[in-house]
Structure formats: structure tokens, C-alpha cells
Image: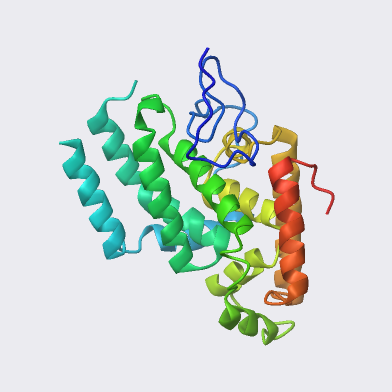
Length: 79
Length: 192
């Protein structure tokens, strides 16, 4: 199976994910689908509320121009 | 194999989340957006490796985290640590009361070990499952649970006692940061 080294990501860092079948174990490989069940954290537990608010504040910010332009370029490349 | 239009749409939809994760990791908006830009470029280059139907967020967060670790090692972050922020940390009054401000929360996160910070960001802020967070960080499920538990406790203590901050701009802080990086990169257990 093709465990190709990914030159885009640092060789000095450990494989960020577990090996999954024939997927490479570098940072560009895909993690297993989200697990479900007992190990799921609670949905918005009280301790996480401020963290989520902080996170959401950034999520809702408008994108800076250079990122919007990059997305535009990817759009054009994808046509 | 991914179908490109779906990939592109999913990738674009993930950008705000990447920004939020990156901002929490490095505490600086400018560097966070640089991280996101690099992540987008790498994800786009590696798009054929993405399996449609799986989590784009987990995949791209993994890429972003790896870039962040590399940038930290290259001194790009350590060398020009946000002095303004460090000064704010030093003047944060002890025992402050009242509603928690998000800026205080951000400072508290930056003052804790990076491995706890990323665990809290993934599970607490981003709503990742423990399994997904463990995959993004390349560590065991028990490790991520431990980091979240310790991070929660540390965060609560810092906020309650007004110990938000510290000597974030000092050489001592840089040394601590390096030690944390080594621990994260080599997957050593959290001993702090």
C-alpha cells in the first residue's frame, strides 16, 4: 500500500493520525470518520460555553481580503 | 476520490473554522490567517487524498496544526511574540470579578501549555469528539481526555484566581514553549 511521504508537511512531526487502511499516515491523509457514542463530549457543556463563544466570534468575522482572494483563485482553478 | 466541486465547497465552508482554531492556537490574528492561507494551499494541493464523505474539518485542522508546529520550530512565532499582549498579561488585575471577557479567556488559553490549549480548542471550542481530537493531535484517546480535563481545571483556576497571564514575552516563556513543542511533537505524555 502506498504510504508515501508527504513533502508538504514536516517530517519531524509525528504522524498526526492513526493509520487507516491504505491511506498514508501523513498530515494530508484523512482521519477516520467521526466516532459516535459514549466518548462524544457532551453537547455544549457549561465549561465549554465561553470557549465556543470565543471560537464562534472568529467564525462569524468577515474573511480578510487575501483569504477571500485565495478562495476566488481556487474557484477559478477548479472550473 | 473526491469530486472536486464538493471538495471546494467543503474546503471553503471550513475556512471560518480554520481561522477560529488558528486564532486560538497562536493568539494572533495576523499569524492565524497566514496559517489558514498555507493550510488552504496545502489542502488544495492534496485534494486527491481527501475521501469524500469524511470530515473536512478534521482533515484540514490536522494540516493546520502541523504547519503551526513547524512555524513554531522555525522561530517565526517565538521570536516576535506579541509584546503588547505580554504587557497586557502583566497588568491583568488579580482577583477580577464579573462576567468573563473573551479577551481574558484568550489570554488564559495562551498562558497554558500548548497541548492543553489545542485540546480545549478542539473539544471545548470546536465541538470535536474526543476521537477526532485525538486523531488531529496524533495522540491516544486517553491522552486527549486527560489534556481536556487538565485544561479545564487550569482554565477555571486561572480565571477564578485572576492568574491570567504571566511572563509570556520572556525568555523563560520561550524556553517553556520549546519544551512544550518537543513534548507535543514526540507525543510524550502530558506530565504537567
